Amino acid sequence: MVHSAQHAASYYAASSAPHPDHPFLQGEHSADVCIVGGGYSGLNTAIELAERGLSVILLEARKIGWGASGRNGGQLIRGVGHGLEQFLPIIGEDGVHSMKLMGLEAVEIVRERVERHAIDCDLTWGYCDLANKPAELQGFAEDAEELRGLGYRHPLRLVQAADLHTIVGSDRYVGGLVDMGSGHLHPLNLALGEAAAASRLGVRLYEQSQVTRIDYGPEVKVHTAQGRVRAKTLVLCCNAYHNDLNRELGGKVLPAGSYIIATEPLGEERARQLLPQNMAVCDQRVALDYYRLSADHRLLFGGACHYSGRDPRDIAAYMRPKMLKVFAQLADVRIDYQWGGMIGIGANRLPQIGRLASQPNVYYAQAYSGHGLNATHLAARLLGEAISGQEGGRFDLFAKVQHPTFPGGKLMRSPLLALGMLWYRLKELV
Image 1 (cartoon, helix red, strand yellow):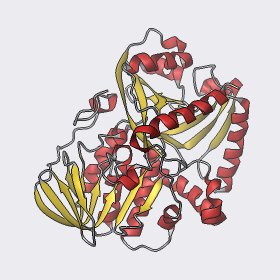
Image 2 (cartoon, helix red, strand yellow):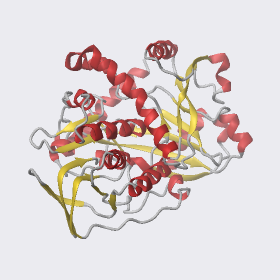
Image 3 (cartoon, rainbow, N blue to C red):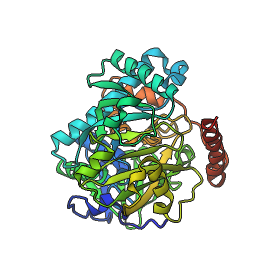
Image 4 (spheres, rainbow, N blue to C red):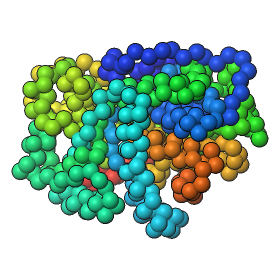
C-alpha cells in the first residue's frame, strides 16, 4: 500500500469538512514549545499549552490528521491501557485506581473539546462490547461492577444472547455489554476541528514539514528541509510513524497495520437492520472485528491487525470475507472505500507518556495500542499539566512505568511479535 503525502483515500477523506492548507516551515522561528506530529496527541497538546499561555509551533511531516488520527475506526471507548494491575508494584493501588479514573476522564475530554469548539464530527453515543464466548460475558459483568465502583456515571447494561438482536443483526455472538458513555465519531473531522481550534488559540501549524534533525540541549533546535525552530521544550508525538527520529523512543513502539472497508450507502432501514441502535461495536478476539455505521448509513468494518509489517495487496478482498462472516446478508453490497494505516503498539499495552531521562526538556506520548482516540486526549492533558508546571503528579504516574524496547531491532521486531500473536490466536481455537 502506497502512502502519499496527502490523506489516505478513505471514506473519511472523501467526506471530510472543508479545511485550509497550512504552510510549510521556512526560515527561523522560535516558541516556548515545539511539537512534532499533527495527530490527536500533537494537536491536543498544543491546545492544552496554548490555553495555559505558552507559545507553540507544531510541525507535521504530511497533512494534519494524516496518520492514525485521520484513518482509525472512529470508536471512542472508555479506558486506558490493558491489565493495569500489572503496574501495582510500580505505582501502587492508588496509582492504578487513578489510572482507571483517568481512563474514564479521557472520553470526557473528547466530549468537552467537541462541545466547546463546536466540532462537527458526527459524535454519537452508544457502544457495545461483544462476547464471542460465555466466559467473556462473565468478564463483562465484572467490568460493569468495577466501573460502577469507580463512580461511572453513564448507563451500563449486560445483554444476553436472546436480546442481542436489538444491538447487532448477527448471530455470531453470545452477549454484550452496552456502554452509553462511549460511542463513535468521524475521526478526521475531529482532528481537523481540533487543528482549527489550535489555530484560533494562536498555535502556529506547519504541514509538509518533516523533521530532519534535532539538536538537543537546554534550547532545542528542530530542523526541517527549509526551516528551523528553537524552543525551550520539545514534544514528540510521532507514534507509529516515528521513522527513527529518536531511536530510543522508536524502539519502544511497534507499527502494526489495521484496515477498514466502507460499503456503499445502505439506506437507513437496511443499516439499522445491522446495528439497530447505531452503536459502535467490537468483539474480543486477538484479531478483533470493530464496526459501526457512518452518518450516511454505510457500514464501516475494520480490524485484522497485522504485526508483520506487510499490508494486504487488496484490502477489500481481504476484509470483505471477514465482514460477511458477521453479516452474510451483505453479499450483494458494493465496497466503495478501502484503506489502512499504522497504529503504535507498546509491549505492555500502556500508553507511553513521559520525558527523556537524558533530555528533561523533551517530552513524548505514543503507543496507544489501538485505543488512541481517547488516550491521546488524556496524554495531551497530562503533558499540558507537566510542561506548564501544574502540580498533581498525574503525569508522573505514567512516567514511572518503564517500557521495554522490542527485541530484534527494526528489521526483526515485527516478525518476532507476529509469531507471538499467532500463538495467542491459536489459543483462541482451544
